[in-house]
Image (cartoon, rainbow, N blue to C red):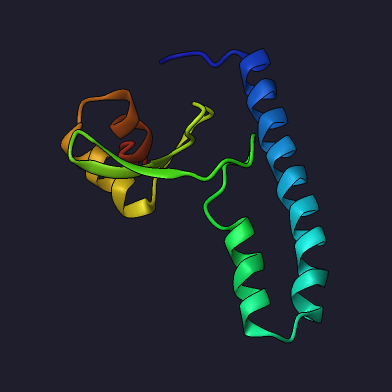
Amino acid sequence: MEERDPFIEKLHEKERAEEDVYFAKRDRELLPKLSHVTDEDQRRNIRELAYMRCPDCGGRLKRVTHYGVSIEECPTGHGLWLMDSEMHTLTKRERNSWLARQFFRPKLF
């Protein structure tokens, strides 16, 4: 069985916490704007500002296809985002990869 490095685990926890803080801050800024807007065009504009953006740089995510699966990626290389259905398509096709092992772990009971 593979041992997990506690430092790496802590680093991942820190990254997730930083993402949570980023999105909470962004939501706190956007929610008051949405609640005061009465015009539907303004609501649409605000939604457009927040929709499909990279959490790191704020760039608009672009849809690309890799190996037959459409995903969203940051144009400056900060990451890839997959929907649940896209992730399952990849994991089913790549049954023996590290990715599939994360999603299809054997049940211990």
